[in-house]
Amino acid sequence: MSPESQDRRQIERRRTFGIISHPDAGKTTLTEKLLLFGGAIQLAGTVKARKASRYAASDWMAMEKERGISVSTSVMSFSYAGCAINLLDTPGHRDFSEDTYRVLTAVDSALLVIDAAKGVESQTQKLMDVCRMRSTPVITFINKLDREGLPPLELLADIETRLGLECAPLTWPVGTGSTFKGVYDIQKEELRLFSPTHGGKIRETQMLITDLYGEDPDIRLGAQADALRADMELLREAGTPFSRDRYLAGRQTPVFFGSAVNNFGVRELLDSFILLAPAPLPRPALTETGDLRAVAPDEEEFSGVVFKIQANMDKAHRDRMAFMRVCSGRFTRGMRLKHLRTGKTAAVSNAVLFMAQDRAGVESAYPGDIIGLAGHGVIKIGDTFTERSYLKYTGIPNFAPELFRRVRLRNPLKSKQLQKGLEQLAEEGAVQLFRPLANNDYILGAVGMLQFEVIISRLAGEYAVDAAYEEAKIEAARWVACADKAVFEDFTRRYRQDLAVDAEGALAYLAPSVWKLEATEERWPAVEFRTTREIG
Ligand code: G4P
Image (cartoon, rainbow, N blue to C red; front, side, top):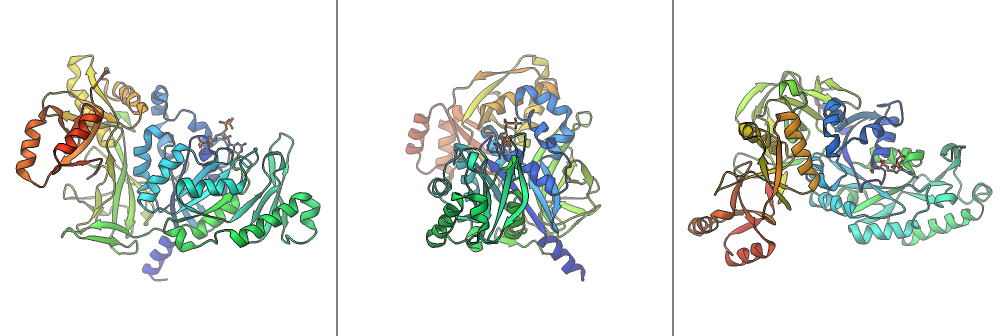
Protein backbone atom coordinates (compact mmCIF):
# COMPACT_ATOMS: atom_id res chain seq x y z
CA MET A 1 0.00 0.00 0.00
CA SER A 2 1.30 3.47 -0.83
CA PRO A 3 1.82 5.87 2.09
CA GLU A 4 -1.13 7.98 0.87
CA SER A 5 -3.55 5.07 0.81
CA GLN A 6 -2.25 3.91 4.18
CA ASP A 7 -3.02 7.34 5.59
CA ARG A 8 -6.45 7.31 3.96
CA ARG A 9 -7.14 3.92 5.51
CA GLN A 10 -6.17 5.32 8.92
CA ILE A 11 -8.61 8.22 8.47
CA GLU A 12 -11.45 5.98 7.32
CA ARG A 13 -11.17 3.75 10.35
CA ARG A 14 -11.44 6.60 12.82
CA ARG A 15 -14.65 7.50 14.67
CA THR A 16 -14.53 10.51 16.98
CA PHE A 17 -17.69 11.09 19.00
CA GLY A 18 -19.18 12.28 22.27
CA ILE A 19 -22.00 10.90 24.40
CA ILE A 20 -24.64 13.38 25.50
CA SER A 21 -27.47 12.87 27.96
CA HIS A 22 -29.47 14.38 30.76
CA PRO A 23 -27.73 13.48 34.06
CA ASP A 24 -28.66 9.97 35.24
CA ALA A 25 -29.86 8.69 31.88
CA GLY A 26 -26.91 6.28 31.79
CA LYS A 27 -24.03 8.02 30.00
CA THR A 28 -21.37 6.76 32.42
CA THR A 29 -22.73 3.23 32.35
CA LEU A 30 -22.84 3.15 28.56
CA THR A 31 -19.33 4.62 28.31
CA GLU A 32 -18.11 1.86 30.53
CA LYS A 33 -19.77 -0.87 28.46
CA LEU A 34 -18.32 0.55 25.25
CA LEU A 35 -14.85 0.55 26.83
CA LEU A 36 -15.38 -3.01 27.99
CA PHE A 37 -16.33 -4.11 24.48
CA GLY A 38 -13.31 -2.28 23.13
CA GLY A 39 -11.05 -4.04 25.62
CA ALA A 40 -9.89 -0.68 26.99
CA ILE A 41 -10.94 -1.64 30.52
CA GLN A 42 -11.31 -5.09 32.04
CA LEU A 43 -13.55 -4.37 34.97
CA ALA A 44 -17.02 -2.88 35.17
CA GLY A 45 -17.14 -0.10 37.76
CA THR A 46 -13.89 1.55 36.71
CA VAL A 47 -15.44 4.56 35.03
CA LYS A 48 -18.27 4.77 37.52
CA ALA A 49 -15.96 4.97 40.51
CA ARG A 50 -14.35 8.02 39.00
CA LYS A 51 -17.59 9.73 38.21
CA ALA A 52 -18.59 10.04 41.87
CA SER A 53 -16.19 12.87 42.60
CA ARG A 54 -16.60 14.81 39.41
CA TYR A 55 -17.83 18.38 39.23
CA ALA A 56 -18.83 18.78 42.85
CA ALA A 57 -16.90 21.81 44.03
CA SER A 58 -16.18 20.34 47.44
CA ASP A 59 -14.50 17.42 45.75
CA TRP A 60 -12.39 19.57 43.53
CA MET A 61 -9.29 19.23 45.67
CA ALA A 62 -9.60 15.48 45.88
CA MET A 63 -10.15 15.47 42.17
CA GLU A 64 -6.92 17.35 41.74
CA LYS A 65 -5.05 14.51 43.35
CA GLU A 66 -6.52 12.16 40.85
CA ARG A 67 -6.06 14.55 38.01
CA GLY A 68 -4.10 12.07 35.95
CA ILE A 69 -7.18 9.90 35.91
CA SER A 70 -9.82 12.51 35.40
CA VAL A 71 -7.89 14.02 32.55
CA SER A 72 -7.27 10.78 30.78
CA THR A 73 -10.98 10.06 30.97
CA SER A 74 -11.64 13.29 29.03
CA VAL A 75 -10.55 11.41 25.92
CA MET A 76 -10.85 7.67 25.69
CA SER A 77 -9.47 5.75 22.75
CA PHE A 78 -10.15 2.13 21.98
CA SER A 79 -10.39 -0.15 19.00
CA TYR A 80 -13.34 -2.19 17.93
CA ALA A 81 -13.76 -4.31 14.79
CA GLY A 82 -10.89 -2.62 13.02
CA CYS A 83 -12.00 0.92 13.91
CA ALA A 84 -10.01 3.33 16.06
CA ILE A 85 -12.59 5.03 18.26
CA ASN A 86 -12.06 8.28 20.16
CA LEU A 87 -14.72 8.94 22.76
CA LEU A 88 -14.68 12.48 24.12
CA ASP A 89 -16.20 12.98 27.54
CA THR A 90 -18.72 15.78 27.85
CA PRO A 91 -19.73 17.07 31.27
CA GLY A 92 -23.40 16.23 31.72
CA HIS A 93 -24.04 18.87 34.36
CA ARG A 94 -25.77 21.90 32.91
CA ASP A 95 -23.45 24.27 34.78
CA PHE A 96 -20.63 23.16 32.52
CA SER A 97 -22.54 23.37 29.26
CA GLU A 98 -19.96 25.71 27.71
CA ASP A 99 -17.31 23.08 28.16
CA THR A 100 -19.63 20.55 26.58
CA TYR A 101 -20.15 22.83 23.61
CA ARG A 102 -16.43 23.17 23.04
CA VAL A 103 -15.96 19.42 23.22
CA LEU A 104 -18.76 18.91 20.72
CA THR A 105 -16.93 21.12 18.22
CA ALA A 106 -14.22 18.44 18.12
CA VAL A 107 -16.42 15.42 17.35
CA ASP A 108 -17.79 14.09 14.08
CA SER A 109 -20.91 12.59 15.61
CA ALA A 110 -22.76 12.15 18.89
CA LEU A 111 -24.56 9.43 20.78
CA LEU A 112 -27.65 10.57 22.65
CA VAL A 113 -28.77 8.55 25.68
CA ILE A 114 -32.39 8.81 26.78
CA ASP A 115 -33.98 7.25 29.86
CA ALA A 116 -36.97 5.19 28.66
CA ALA A 117 -38.98 6.19 31.71
CA LYS A 118 -38.38 9.91 31.30
CA GLY A 119 -38.15 10.56 27.57
CA VAL A 120 -36.63 13.84 26.42
CA GLU A 121 -35.45 15.91 29.41
CA SER A 122 -34.40 19.55 29.68
CA GLN A 123 -30.68 18.97 29.33
CA THR A 124 -31.26 16.66 26.37
CA GLN A 125 -32.94 19.53 24.62
CA LYS A 126 -30.11 21.97 25.33
CA LEU A 127 -27.44 19.56 24.16
CA MET A 128 -29.38 18.82 21.01
CA ASP A 129 -29.55 22.56 20.29
CA VAL A 130 -25.77 22.51 20.30
CA CYS A 131 -25.65 19.50 17.94
CA ARG A 132 -28.12 21.20 15.65
CA MET A 133 -25.94 24.32 15.38
CA ARG A 134 -23.29 22.17 13.71
CA SER A 135 -25.64 19.61 12.09
CA THR A 136 -23.86 16.90 14.07
CA PRO A 137 -25.16 13.42 13.19
CA VAL A 138 -26.77 11.83 16.26
CA ILE A 139 -27.48 8.18 17.07
CA THR A 140 -30.00 7.64 19.89
CA PHE A 141 -29.86 4.93 22.54
CA ILE A 142 -33.02 4.55 24.62
CA ASN A 143 -31.83 3.10 27.90
CA LYS A 144 -33.23 1.32 30.97
CA LEU A 145 -35.69 -0.92 29.13
CA ASP A 146 -35.41 -3.29 32.09
CA ARG A 147 -37.49 -0.77 34.05
CA GLU A 148 -41.07 0.18 33.39
CA GLY A 149 -40.90 2.90 30.79
CA LEU A 150 -42.93 4.81 28.25
CA PRO A 151 -44.18 2.89 25.20
CA PRO A 152 -41.56 2.93 22.38
CA LEU A 153 -43.83 4.75 19.95
CA GLU A 154 -44.45 7.46 22.51
CA LEU A 155 -40.69 7.85 23.04
CA LEU A 156 -40.10 8.23 19.31
CA ALA A 157 -42.90 10.81 19.05
CA ASP A 158 -41.36 12.69 21.97
CA ILE A 159 -37.96 12.83 20.21
CA GLU A 160 -39.56 13.92 16.95
CA THR A 161 -41.59 16.74 18.42
CA ARG A 162 -39.27 17.99 21.14
CA LEU A 163 -35.91 17.52 19.45
CA GLY A 164 -37.10 18.07 15.90
CA LEU A 165 -35.36 14.91 14.69
CA GLU A 166 -36.91 12.20 12.54
CA CYS A 167 -36.57 8.81 14.22
CA ALA A 168 -35.67 5.66 12.34
CA PRO A 169 -35.65 2.75 14.80
CA LEU A 170 -33.03 0.13 13.94
CA THR A 171 -33.82 -2.09 16.90
CA TRP A 172 -37.09 -2.60 18.74
CA PRO A 173 -37.77 -3.70 22.31
CA VAL A 174 -39.98 -6.59 23.28
CA GLY A 175 -41.76 -5.38 26.42
CA THR A 176 -40.39 -3.14 29.16
CA GLY A 177 -39.65 -3.65 32.84
CA SER A 178 -40.90 -7.00 34.11
CA THR A 179 -42.05 -7.98 30.62
CA PHE A 180 -38.78 -7.06 28.90
CA LYS A 181 -37.72 -10.02 26.78
CA GLY A 182 -35.13 -8.73 24.37
CA VAL A 183 -34.33 -6.54 21.42
CA TYR A 184 -35.24 -7.18 17.78
CA ASP A 185 -32.68 -6.05 15.21
CA ILE A 186 -34.85 -4.67 12.42
CA GLN A 187 -32.13 -4.65 9.77
CA LYS A 188 -30.72 -8.09 10.46
CA GLU A 189 -34.19 -9.42 11.24
CA GLU A 190 -33.09 -11.27 14.32
CA LEU A 191 -34.29 -11.25 17.89
CA ARG A 192 -31.81 -11.45 20.73
CA LEU A 193 -33.36 -12.79 23.89
CA PHE A 194 -32.37 -12.03 27.41
CA SER A 195 -32.84 -13.95 30.59
CA PRO A 196 -32.84 -12.74 34.18
CA THR A 197 -30.14 -14.05 36.49
CA HIS A 198 -30.34 -14.48 40.24
CA GLY A 199 -29.34 -11.03 41.46
CA GLY A 200 -32.24 -9.59 39.47
CA LYS A 201 -29.78 -8.66 36.72
CA ILE A 202 -30.55 -9.71 33.20
CA ARG A 203 -28.12 -11.61 31.06
CA GLU A 204 -27.57 -11.54 27.31
CA THR A 205 -28.11 -15.06 26.02
CA GLN A 206 -26.74 -16.41 22.79
CA MET A 207 -30.33 -17.17 21.91
CA LEU A 208 -31.07 -15.65 18.56
CA ILE A 209 -34.38 -16.05 16.80
CA THR A 210 -34.05 -15.42 13.10
CA ASP A 211 -37.53 -16.21 11.87
CA LEU A 212 -40.06 -13.81 13.31
CA TYR A 213 -42.91 -15.71 11.66
CA GLY A 214 -41.83 -19.21 12.73
CA GLU A 215 -42.79 -21.05 15.91
CA ASP A 216 -39.85 -19.99 18.08
CA PRO A 217 -41.14 -16.50 18.91
CA ASP A 218 -44.48 -17.93 20.11
CA ILE A 219 -42.73 -20.51 22.27
CA ARG A 220 -40.35 -17.98 23.79
CA LEU A 221 -42.45 -14.85 23.93
CA GLY A 222 -46.03 -16.08 24.17
CA ALA A 223 -48.50 -13.34 23.37
CA GLN A 224 -45.67 -10.82 23.01
CA ALA A 225 -44.68 -12.54 19.75
CA ASP A 226 -47.82 -11.30 18.02
CA ALA A 227 -47.37 -7.86 19.53
CA LEU A 228 -43.85 -7.70 18.08
CA ARG A 229 -45.09 -8.83 14.66
CA ALA A 230 -47.76 -6.13 14.78
CA ASP A 231 -45.18 -3.51 15.75
CA MET A 232 -42.96 -4.55 12.85
CA GLU A 233 -45.83 -4.32 10.41
CA LEU A 234 -46.75 -0.90 11.71
CA LEU A 235 -43.15 0.29 11.34
CA ARG A 236 -42.93 -1.12 7.83
CA GLU A 237 -46.06 0.73 6.78
CA ALA A 238 -45.90 3.93 8.75
CA GLY A 239 -42.38 4.15 10.13
CA THR A 240 -39.57 6.35 8.82
CA PRO A 241 -37.10 4.30 6.78
CA PHE A 242 -33.49 4.80 7.74
CA SER A 243 -31.56 7.12 5.43
CA ARG A 244 -27.84 7.46 5.99
CA ASP A 245 -27.80 10.75 4.12
CA ARG A 246 -30.45 12.23 6.40
CA TYR A 247 -28.59 10.92 9.44
CA LEU A 248 -25.32 12.45 8.22
CA ALA A 249 -27.12 15.74 7.59
CA GLY A 250 -28.28 15.77 11.23
CA ARG A 251 -31.97 15.51 10.31
CA GLN A 252 -32.67 11.91 11.22
CA THR A 253 -31.55 9.81 14.15
CA PRO A 254 -31.29 6.02 14.06
CA VAL A 255 -32.71 4.72 17.34
CA PHE A 256 -31.57 1.74 19.41
CA PHE A 257 -33.18 0.31 22.51
CA GLY A 258 -31.51 -1.49 25.39
CA SER A 259 -30.28 -1.50 28.91
CA ALA A 260 -26.73 -0.33 29.40
CA VAL A 261 -26.31 -1.67 32.90
CA ASN A 262 -27.37 -5.11 31.72
CA ASN A 263 -25.33 -4.98 28.54
CA PHE A 264 -28.47 -5.22 26.46
CA GLY A 265 -28.49 -3.91 22.97
CA VAL A 266 -25.06 -2.35 23.49
CA ARG A 267 -23.33 -4.63 21.01
CA GLU A 268 -25.99 -3.94 18.35
CA LEU A 269 -25.48 -0.24 19.03
CA LEU A 270 -21.69 -0.43 18.73
CA ASP A 271 -21.79 -2.63 15.60
CA SER A 272 -24.10 -0.16 13.89
CA PHE A 273 -22.22 2.85 15.21
CA ILE A 274 -18.98 1.89 13.47
CA LEU A 275 -20.84 1.30 10.21
CA LEU A 276 -23.01 4.42 10.28
CA ALA A 277 -21.06 7.10 12.12
CA PRO A 278 -18.93 9.27 9.85
CA ALA A 279 -15.15 9.07 9.68
CA PRO A 280 -13.41 12.45 10.14
CA LEU A 281 -15.11 15.09 8.01
CA PRO A 282 -13.79 18.21 6.27
CA ARG A 283 -13.75 21.28 8.54
CA PRO A 284 -14.18 24.93 7.61
CA ALA A 285 -11.21 27.22 8.14
CA LEU A 286 -10.36 30.78 7.17
CA THR A 287 -7.49 31.25 4.75
CA GLU A 288 -5.08 34.16 4.62
CA THR A 289 -7.38 36.05 2.24
CA GLY A 290 -10.28 35.71 4.68
CA ASP A 291 -12.12 33.12 2.58
CA LEU A 292 -13.71 30.10 4.17
CA ARG A 293 -12.40 26.78 2.87
CA ALA A 294 -13.31 23.19 3.78
CA VAL A 295 -10.08 21.48 4.81
CA ALA A 296 -10.26 17.77 3.90
CA PRO A 297 -8.79 15.27 6.37
CA ASP A 298 -6.71 13.62 3.66
CA GLU A 299 -4.88 16.81 2.72
CA GLU A 300 -1.17 16.26 3.08
CA GLU A 301 -0.38 19.17 5.34
CA PHE A 302 -1.00 18.73 9.03
CA SER A 303 -3.51 21.02 10.74
CA GLY A 304 -5.26 20.88 14.10
CA VAL A 305 -7.37 23.02 16.41
CA VAL A 306 -7.32 23.39 20.20
CA PHE A 307 -10.78 22.95 21.75
CA LYS A 308 -10.01 22.50 25.44
CA ILE A 309 -7.38 23.60 27.93
CA GLN A 310 -6.84 22.07 31.31
CA ALA A 311 -4.51 23.99 33.61
CA ASN A 312 -2.32 22.99 36.51
CA MET A 313 -2.41 19.28 35.90
CA ASP A 314 0.95 19.11 37.55
CA LYS A 315 0.92 21.78 40.24
CA ALA A 316 4.67 21.72 40.76
CA HIS A 317 5.20 22.85 37.18
CA ARG A 318 2.17 25.11 36.68
CA ASP A 319 1.67 23.38 33.38
CA ARG A 320 -1.37 23.22 31.23
CA MET A 321 -2.55 20.71 28.72
CA ALA A 322 -4.06 21.83 25.45
CA PHE A 323 -6.32 19.29 23.73
CA MET A 324 -5.96 19.49 19.98
CA ARG A 325 -8.06 17.73 17.40
CA VAL A 326 -6.10 16.64 14.35
CA CYS A 327 -8.03 17.93 11.32
CA SER A 328 -5.77 17.05 8.37
CA GLY A 329 -2.48 15.39 7.54
CA ARG A 330 -0.49 13.21 9.87
CA PHE A 331 1.17 14.22 13.10
CA THR A 332 4.50 12.65 13.95
CA ARG A 333 6.54 13.11 17.07
CA GLY A 334 9.05 15.92 16.87
CA MET A 335 7.25 17.56 13.95
CA ARG A 336 7.65 21.32 13.65
CA LEU A 337 4.33 23.13 13.93
CA LYS A 338 3.36 26.71 13.35
CA HIS A 339 1.18 28.34 16.00
CA LEU A 340 -1.00 30.66 13.97
CA ARG A 341 -1.79 33.22 16.69
CA THR A 342 1.80 33.81 17.76
CA GLY A 343 3.35 33.06 14.38
CA LYS A 344 5.99 30.92 16.09
CA THR A 345 7.15 27.55 14.81
CA ALA A 346 8.45 24.93 17.21
CA ALA A 347 9.14 21.21 17.36
CA VAL A 348 6.47 19.26 19.26
CA SER A 349 8.19 16.51 21.15
CA ASN A 350 6.04 16.23 24.26
CA ALA A 351 2.66 15.40 22.72
CA VAL A 352 0.50 12.76 24.37
CA LEU A 353 -2.24 10.58 22.98
CA PHE A 354 -5.06 9.81 25.38
CA MET A 355 -5.82 6.22 26.14
CA ALA A 356 -8.55 4.92 28.41
CA GLN A 357 -6.30 4.11 31.34
CA ASP A 358 -3.31 6.11 30.75
CA ARG A 359 -1.58 8.73 28.64
CA ALA A 360 0.74 7.24 26.11
CA GLY A 361 3.38 8.99 24.05
CA VAL A 362 2.28 9.74 20.51
CA GLU A 363 4.39 8.54 17.64
CA SER A 364 1.84 9.51 15.06
CA ALA A 365 -1.75 10.71 15.05
CA TYR A 366 -4.33 11.01 12.29
CA PRO A 367 -7.37 13.19 11.63
CA GLY A 368 -9.99 12.54 14.31
CA ASP A 369 -7.35 11.82 16.96
CA ILE A 370 -6.89 14.07 19.95
CA ILE A 371 -3.43 14.92 21.10
CA GLY A 372 -2.44 16.70 24.27
CA LEU A 373 0.18 19.43 24.11
CA ALA A 374 1.82 20.45 27.34
CA GLY A 375 2.50 24.16 27.43
CA HIS A 376 3.03 27.05 29.75
CA GLY A 377 0.19 29.34 28.92
CA VAL A 378 0.82 30.36 25.34
CA ILE A 379 -1.78 28.06 23.83
CA LYS A 380 -5.42 29.18 23.97
CA ILE A 381 -8.77 27.63 23.12
CA GLY A 382 -9.49 28.07 19.41
CA ASP A 383 -5.81 28.16 18.37
CA THR A 384 -4.87 26.54 15.07
CA PHE A 385 -1.60 24.72 14.36
CA THR A 386 -0.32 23.91 10.86
CA GLU A 387 2.99 22.95 9.27
CA ARG A 388 3.36 26.17 7.31
CA SER A 389 0.11 27.49 5.76
CA TYR A 390 -2.16 30.15 7.16
CA LEU A 391 -5.38 28.46 8.32
CA LYS A 392 -7.73 29.43 11.10
CA TYR A 393 -10.39 27.00 12.24
CA THR A 394 -13.63 28.68 13.22
CA GLY A 395 -16.68 27.91 15.27
CA ILE A 396 -15.71 27.82 18.94
CA PRO A 397 -17.82 30.54 20.54
CA ASN A 398 -18.11 32.00 24.03
CA PHE A 399 -21.71 32.34 25.16
CA ALA A 400 -22.92 35.44 26.99
CA PRO A 401 -22.91 34.48 30.69
CA GLU A 402 -26.11 34.69 32.67
CA LEU A 403 -24.75 34.88 36.22
CA PHE A 404 -22.31 37.45 37.58
CA ARG A 405 -20.17 37.91 40.68
CA ARG A 406 -17.62 40.47 41.81
CA VAL A 407 -14.48 38.89 43.27
CA ARG A 408 -13.30 40.19 46.63
CA LEU A 409 -9.76 39.42 47.73
CA ARG A 410 -9.46 38.62 51.41
CA ASN A 411 -5.70 39.07 51.55
CA PRO A 412 -4.72 42.26 49.68
CA LEU A 413 -1.11 41.12 49.34
CA LYS A 414 -2.18 38.47 46.90
CA SER A 415 -3.57 40.74 44.20
CA LYS A 416 -0.99 39.65 41.60
CA GLN A 417 -1.75 35.99 42.18
CA LEU A 418 -5.47 36.72 41.96
CA GLN A 419 -5.04 38.38 38.61
CA LYS A 420 -2.88 35.59 37.28
CA GLY A 421 -5.23 32.89 38.59
CA LEU A 422 -8.33 34.51 37.14
CA GLU A 423 -6.68 35.13 33.80
CA GLN A 424 -5.51 31.55 33.53
CA LEU A 425 -8.84 30.08 34.62
CA ALA A 426 -10.60 32.31 32.11
CA GLU A 427 -8.26 31.15 29.35
CA GLU A 428 -9.06 27.61 30.27
CA GLY A 429 -12.73 28.50 29.78
CA ALA A 430 -13.64 27.62 33.38
CA VAL A 431 -15.26 31.05 33.78
CA GLN A 432 -15.45 34.36 31.89
CA LEU A 433 -13.52 37.30 33.23
CA PHE A 434 -14.50 40.94 32.68
CA ARG A 435 -12.48 44.02 33.65
CA PRO A 436 -14.68 47.16 33.80
CA LEU A 437 -13.40 50.26 32.00
CA ALA A 438 -14.37 52.43 34.96
CA ASN A 439 -12.67 50.60 37.86
CA ASN A 440 -10.31 47.79 38.84
CA ASP A 441 -12.94 45.19 39.73
CA TYR A 442 -12.83 41.59 38.63
CA ILE A 443 -16.25 40.54 37.39
CA LEU A 444 -16.83 36.86 36.71
CA GLY A 445 -19.53 35.61 34.37
CA ALA A 446 -20.80 32.04 34.34
CA VAL A 447 -23.53 29.93 32.87
CA GLY A 448 -24.00 27.84 36.03
CA MET A 449 -23.51 28.49 39.76
CA LEU A 450 -21.17 25.54 40.22
CA GLN A 451 -18.62 27.28 38.04
CA PHE A 452 -18.28 30.01 40.70
CA GLU A 453 -17.71 27.48 43.46
CA VAL A 454 -15.06 25.68 41.46
CA ILE A 455 -13.21 28.96 40.81
CA ILE A 456 -12.98 29.89 44.52
CA SER A 457 -11.71 26.47 45.44
CA ARG A 458 -9.23 26.37 42.56
CA LEU A 459 -7.97 29.87 43.42
CA ALA A 460 -7.25 28.60 46.93
CA GLY A 461 -5.77 25.27 45.88
CA GLU A 462 -3.74 26.25 42.86
CA TYR A 463 -2.87 29.92 43.46
CA ALA A 464 -3.01 30.17 47.28
CA VAL A 465 -5.52 33.01 46.96
CA ASP A 466 -8.26 33.47 49.55
CA ALA A 467 -11.14 35.11 47.70
CA ALA A 468 -14.89 35.48 48.14
CA TYR A 469 -17.77 36.80 46.09
CA GLU A 470 -19.93 39.88 46.28
CA GLU A 471 -23.16 40.47 44.44
CA ALA A 472 -22.62 42.29 41.17
CA LYS A 473 -25.57 44.33 39.93
CA ILE A 474 -25.44 42.82 36.48
CA GLU A 475 -28.15 40.78 34.83
CA ALA A 476 -26.88 40.31 31.29
CA ALA A 477 -23.78 40.72 29.14
CA ARG A 478 -23.52 41.41 25.42
CA TRP A 479 -20.44 41.84 23.27
CA VAL A 480 -20.75 45.14 21.43
CA ALA A 481 -19.54 46.33 18.05
CA CYS A 482 -20.55 48.98 15.53
CA ALA A 483 -19.57 49.72 11.95
CA ASP A 484 -20.05 53.45 12.47
CA LYS A 485 -17.00 54.68 14.37
CA ALA A 486 -18.53 57.96 15.50
CA VAL A 487 -21.66 56.30 16.84
CA PHE A 488 -19.53 53.72 18.68
CA GLU A 489 -17.37 56.40 20.27
CA ASP A 490 -20.49 58.18 21.46
CA PHE A 491 -21.91 54.90 22.79
CA THR A 492 -18.73 53.93 24.67
CA ARG A 493 -18.44 57.40 26.21
CA ARG A 494 -22.02 57.39 27.48
CA TYR A 495 -21.98 53.81 28.74
CA ARG A 496 -18.44 53.72 30.11
CA GLN A 497 -19.79 52.82 33.57
CA ASP A 498 -21.31 49.60 32.20
CA LEU A 499 -18.59 48.57 29.75
CA ALA A 500 -15.85 46.03 30.36
CA VAL A 501 -13.27 44.07 28.40
CA ASP A 502 -13.21 40.29 28.54
CA ALA A 503 -10.14 38.04 28.81
CA GLU A 504 -9.51 38.36 25.09
CA GLY A 505 -9.82 42.13 25.10
CA ALA A 506 -13.28 42.21 23.49
CA LEU A 507 -15.63 44.97 24.63
CA ALA A 508 -18.80 43.93 26.45
CA TYR A 509 -21.81 45.79 27.81
CA LEU A 510 -22.72 44.55 31.31
CA ALA A 511 -26.36 45.47 31.73
CA PRO A 512 -27.59 46.21 35.27
CA SER A 513 -30.99 44.77 34.32
CA VAL A 514 -32.64 42.97 31.44
CA TRP A 515 -35.01 45.88 31.12
CA LYS A 516 -32.05 48.29 30.76
CA LEU A 517 -30.48 46.03 28.15
CA GLU A 518 -33.63 46.07 26.06
CA ALA A 519 -33.95 49.83 26.37
CA THR A 520 -30.30 50.33 25.38
CA GLU A 521 -30.61 48.00 22.37
CA GLU A 522 -33.63 49.96 21.23
CA ARG A 523 -31.90 53.28 21.68
CA TRP A 524 -28.77 52.26 19.76
CA PRO A 525 -29.98 50.43 16.65
CA ALA A 526 -26.60 50.82 14.92
CA VAL A 527 -24.77 49.00 17.71
CA GLU A 528 -24.65 45.20 17.61
CA PHE A 529 -25.32 43.45 20.91
CA ARG A 530 -24.03 39.90 20.50
CA THR A 531 -24.85 36.90 22.65
CA THR A 532 -21.88 34.88 21.36
CA ARG A 533 -18.31 35.72 20.52
CA GLU A 534 -15.98 33.59 18.44
CA ILE A 535 -12.88 32.59 20.40
CA GLY A 536 -9.43 33.11 18.92
P1 G4P B 1 -25.17 9.45 33.84
O1 G4P B 1 -23.72 9.21 33.60
O2 G4P B 1 -25.94 9.73 32.60
O3 G4P B 1 -25.45 10.46 34.90
O4 G4P B 1 -25.83 8.08 34.38
P2 G4P B 1 -25.18 6.79 35.03
O5 G4P B 1 -24.55 5.93 34.01
O6 G4P B 1 -24.38 7.14 36.22
O7 G4P B 1 -26.52 6.05 35.47
C1 G4P B 1 -27.41 6.62 36.40
C2 G4P B 1 -28.12 5.54 37.16
O8 G4P B 1 -28.88 4.73 36.25
C3 G4P B 1 -27.16 4.57 37.85
O9 G4P B 1 -27.79 4.14 39.04
C4 G4P B 1 -27.07 3.42 36.88
O10 G4P B 1 -26.72 2.20 37.47
C5 G4P B 1 -28.50 3.38 36.37
N1 G4P B 1 -28.60 2.72 35.06
C6 G4P B 1 -27.83 2.89 33.97
N2 G4P B 1 -28.26 2.10 32.97
C7 G4P B 1 -29.32 1.42 33.44
C8 G4P B 1 -30.19 0.45 32.88
O11 G4P B 1 -30.08 0.03 31.75
N3 G4P B 1 -31.19 -0.01 33.70
C9 G4P B 1 -31.36 0.42 34.98
N4 G4P B 1 -32.36 -0.09 35.67
N5 G4P B 1 -30.55 1.33 35.53
C10 G4P B 1 -29.55 1.82 34.78
P3 G4P B 1 -27.39 4.69 40.47
O12 G4P B 1 -28.35 4.12 41.42
O13 G4P B 1 -27.24 6.17 40.41
O14 G4P B 1 -25.96 4.12 40.67
P4 G4P B 1 -25.53 2.64 41.01
O15 G4P B 1 -26.18 2.34 42.29
O16 G4P B 1 -25.96 1.76 39.92
O17 G4P B 1 -24.06 2.75 41.09
